[in-house]
Amino acid sequence: MRFLMVFMALGLLLAGCPGDSGSGVADVDEGLEAPEPAEESPLPAEEAEETPEEVAAEPEEEPEIAEEEIVHWGVGVTEEDEDEGHRQLQAVEFDGYALIVDDITDDYPEPCAAIRVGELGGTYIETLFQDKVCPGESTYWTSPEGDEYRIKVFETAAGYQGYEYWADVAVYKQG
Image 1 (tube, rainbow, N blue to C red):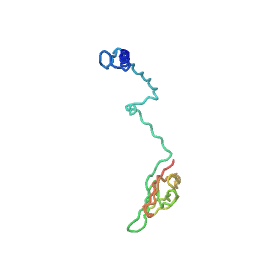
Image 2: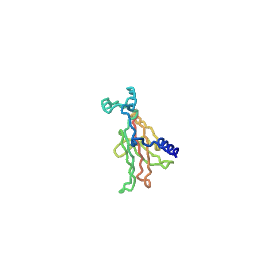
Image 3: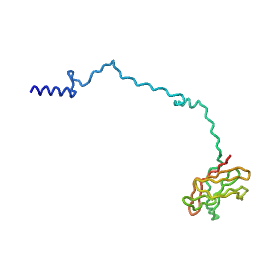
Image 4: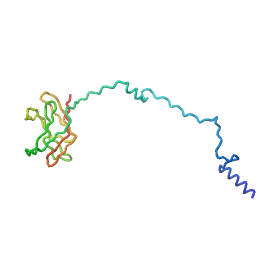
């Protein structure tokens, strides 16, 4: 029996039961402190992040001049004229010329735009250039004055029953 009592006391000591004080809190020597984390070495000047004040104080860099200057970004549209019962072409003007979306072709996988560039002259537009351009593609045209233009089609839609078709087109002046 004595052996059993010693065995139980030893089991309680190993199990972490409180000692004589009866509290489960261990005494800590306050003279010992946890070590402070090591300071990070500062980054070199070129890698250090700038504060908002530093960024605002720096002069802004001049944007690079692109090879192309956009002269028009828009949508060519045709619409049905209720009074006359026919399509009215809508021309988009750029640098004294007109860009017209004559038609949307039934090409696969997307419809392409049949475009025309003309010279404005009152109510009549003299055709100077025409081409078929599919979405994502560009065509190039040189004006009679020698200015070069890039015409890019981004998106097309055939519209409802052949009316109200449109093309999202940008005209860039190269130079």
